[in-house]
Image 1 (cartoon, rainbow, N blue to C red):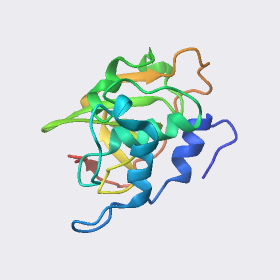
Image 2: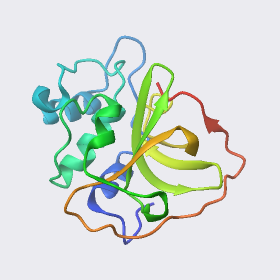
Image 3: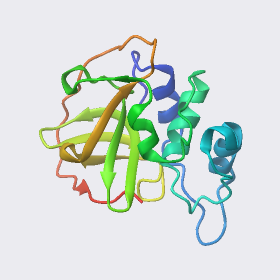
Length: 170
């Protein structure tokens, strides 16, 4: 569901909705292709298995399609916490990059809306696929926007719809 005012990187992210890890020891060539396009210099590692957390790969690949650079070590979710420009919660707009704490590390994805308790996040490696998850606002450690790009839009309030809040996106 692409919206007319979505920034290019969010359009790219929405187009990837439903992409899944391959089961078992197999790898999804699409996810590995995103990593290959970003390269070792950006990711900070040789990325060769979709069993390795890939939320940062997903965000980097979407931004790359809009000619926006990723931070060094983009595969690490918390690397995104200092990338771009800081956004206050009241300035969020669809496409903002949100960074979260989680047991054992972090998680990164794109803001698509919020309810009273949670952000609605379009991200990779959420249940081993590209989905929209509700993530508790208290876990958010950074709200970022690409430097030099105007913030288009404003916070989007949506109903929780009885959907549970994600506990661990690994």
